[in-house]
Image (cartoon, rainbow, N blue to C red; front, side):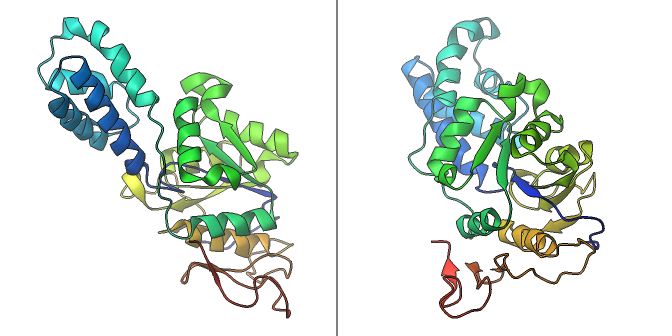
Length: 278
């Protein structure tokens, strides 16, 4: 992490997949739903399921994963147009009862929302992304969610600046005063750079080993760690790189996974015992 120069962020934008929860948990359920639909269509459901799991592990956002899974199980390419629609519908229609979040995420989001306007920018089919938000229960903690596909399909997915520009407009802040937190350099860090903003990378999930290109302002191993970085900058009104915390900004202990006192004053709701995420 380098020193912060210039004015502090006026709002924080967070990614969803592999930033707030492990996307593998959603993909596992969606792949199982496709396997069941394949069996209903007279195919070897277990084989299709296994092939799809392998394709998703190789890259979950490349497109055509179900097509390739069917071909890998020996399905005639000429049969794909008839077989694909119900399998794609099974994938996109998967609604998980519950998805686990990463440790400390709920308390970290609470701390952010207490400090600055908070938004979420996420790519993907809107019906799928909404199911993820509901499954994690994070929809109640994110005051503003922008689904990039609703702005113009795949063309407006990160690193297109469209999503951050839409958030900046809705929040009434300059786009370059946003701070982005996400797991993917090529998307989350790049989209921040596209509007002249800065980003914190969380090195976890499918792209944990991706190189830091483009470079983020800070890199952490956990979302709570990223929030600690963000709050340290937000807490200094001059934004001159001094990490002194402003007294009305919640303090976050990334080591223990807890919100701490905002002021340390007796009776402060955060001052008695650290509040765990769960």
